[in-house]
Structure formats: C-alpha cells, structure tokens
Image 1: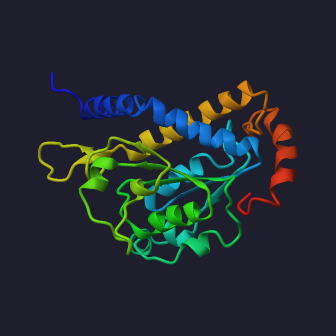
Image 2: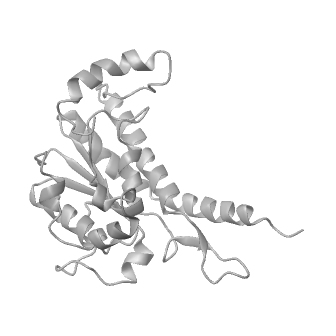
Image 3: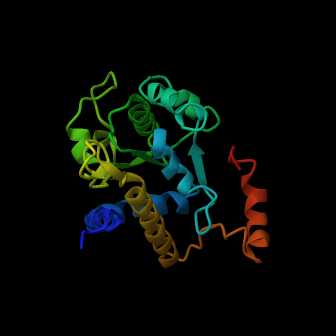
Length: 246
C-alpha cells in the first residue's frame, strides 16, 4: 500500500516538533524572560511579518494567554490587504518607529519576534530597536534557512544574531517540507505549526514559573465559555486603554 501523503507530512512534522521541543534550555530561558518581565509589570511585545504575523496573533487576546501582550501588527506587513505587497514592505527599513508609535518599550519588556528566514529588514530592525531600549528579545526562526542566505538589512545581520534567546523551528530551507512525485515544488510548510507550539510552550512554562513564585498572572479565559465573558470583562476594562488592538 502506498503511504498517504498526509501521513508522510505528519511524520515530518512530528520529527521536527520533537527536535524543537528538545531545546529545553532555550524554552526555559525564554520563559524566564517572560516571567521576569510580567513579575515587574513589563509587557510582552509580539511581531512577525508575512505569515509570521500569525504567531504574534497566536498569543494575543487568547484563551489561556497573558493579558499583558501588545501585538505589533500593520496591515501593509501582513497578508490580508496585499500579500505580494507585504513581501516588498518587509524588506524595507524604517518600520520600527512606526510599529512602536503607540508604545514605549523598556528594559522591563520582552519582544517575541518570529521570522522563518530571518533575513528581512523589518524583523531585524525591530530586534535591534528593542535591544537598544534595553528590552530582551526572543527569536523564533529557521536557522538552516537563515544561515543559507544573506541579510536584507544594511547592518548585514540576521535575526538570530540579535536574540537573547533563539529557538529553531527546524524547518526545511524554503519551509515547505514534503516532495511529491510529479511536482517540482515541495508542499507542506511547518514553520507556523512548530512556531506556534514553541510560543505556547514558552508561555505555559512562564505561567508555571510565576505561580511557583506566588504570582498569579492575568490570563484570558475563552469568551465563548459561559464563565469566560465575565472573567475577561475586568481584564478588558483594565487593558483596553493600554493595548491599542483590544
């Protein structure tokens, strides 16, 4: 019997997920940066361009997610207005002040930034800007891809070179992981699935660290559960003035 293509993809994804979760030191270190920030009233900033913006949305206003999250999302760097346009825009410098125009990032804060290639100007510039302000930077990227290409930023740096903690998604160069007979282009990207899992692993571990310190973090419940709406109301009243996209 010929193996079904989705089974091959499942096997590839599982193998890569297992490798990603072997980064125990990096996951724990990233969680420690988050818990230290939240314990001192800091903020978690999250950003990504292109498809990587999905990871920023993953931890924002999420059931089981921290309330103190500020996503940095601009339509021109996402996909819903012009996907091809976003490819052009993420290669341009000068976006850091625009993305941070509503906020002041400080040494108490953390920037979570995702970029599969790690070569484009916007994420590199954001990471540099955050570090200049004293904030910690957690990077999720594809190290194999990033190390195989040149930077598109004037500094010549790539994103992984700017992270206080760097997590590898163990993707293929180009992201799509599965080759099929009759098609020259591979299919089945893995960066979003593994990046999301790593992000949630970091947040879960940070939550456990806070609880171990006797700190109960502010966490959203599902607004679609019977008790969730009332639980979230107090958080929304507190944070809507502080988080632009709430």
